[in-house]
Image (cartoon, rainbow, N blue to C red; front, side, top):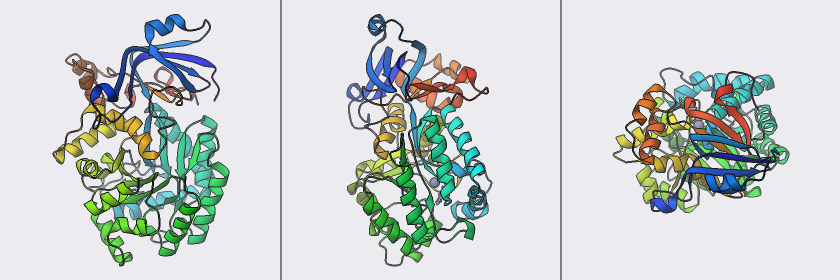
Length: 443
Ligand code: GUN
Ligand code: ZN
């Protein structure tokens, strides 16, 4: 992904700290007219537009996106590549949804052509929504992960994914074994982890679909590869929690199962975390793991309401994700808007600065890639999204009454979706352009 030198001008917005923790002037970096200079895919300079424009060497292309916002690309820390045709399936809660819709669909991904086509669709759609990095579940088929990594690599994207490990509680064609899950994940890591911008995640689906032998093998793998991300599901649904209590009668609680096998650590991403006790939150926090809030999924499957205040009180890092296809939108804007509503039902407030921080720098920190992406900062990779706060008639009408940046961002998040994406860049290379959408892919 070599692009030479390029300058991008716009209304620059980035977060140097969490606005929930630090005062706004320290947390929020905003330049009404700013320029980001990108060299070989990396941000090398950021400054005031007029001054920097005068200093740019002749011949450096300058893309002027004013009056649009330029931010770090969104990071989606939990979604399922094989569920793009499960999204919006009617009428079930988690365990029935898995067996009625999800497992039958995931069986199709033993065919590499199916996984290739779905990966292409997914990357096109993420780019159209301004999402430049995701942590992704493939299926239990090794080739589903290989297809995903091939396509991500071809596009030069920073992506994290894993082959799902599950050895019980699903149709035979989706089951691996303790040994094959271990071996295949190891092979995948050898082939893809650290290649280009890719990382392999250790991906046991969740405790209900792994035997104790598989969780033990997973723990051994985690110990052998201490730097690898881990992703799984935790405490999403009451039926699921009861199943785990029954299947692991020795456990204190659901989190204890993962702790027991050494799966709670930095870069371990626990999807949902809705019904946790304070003991569990404290255990996750003290071991440096992250909780991933998936509001559209939690509402759609009737799973429950995430408690952000409780996580914060106990020091548990939270990221926010779409959870396609339990989730119902690819847009991180829409996801954040639903997150706001979930928190409203909990009597909690979530200002726009905190939401935009979480979608970018916060998610990067939750995933353990804050030294690579998530902010507009010198030395970070130039994965960017350009957003139009006036992308639709209802948005334009609302913006006429907006007076502050915080109000603008809040309305953008509540009313916006993929229509607000003007352009998306990966390592300074344009991977989506609103004016060319629907034509040949730019990837
Ligand atoms: N728990 C285990 N697998 C899944 C899945 O595919 N989606 C959701 N939402 N929860 C899960
Ligand atoms: Zn999930």
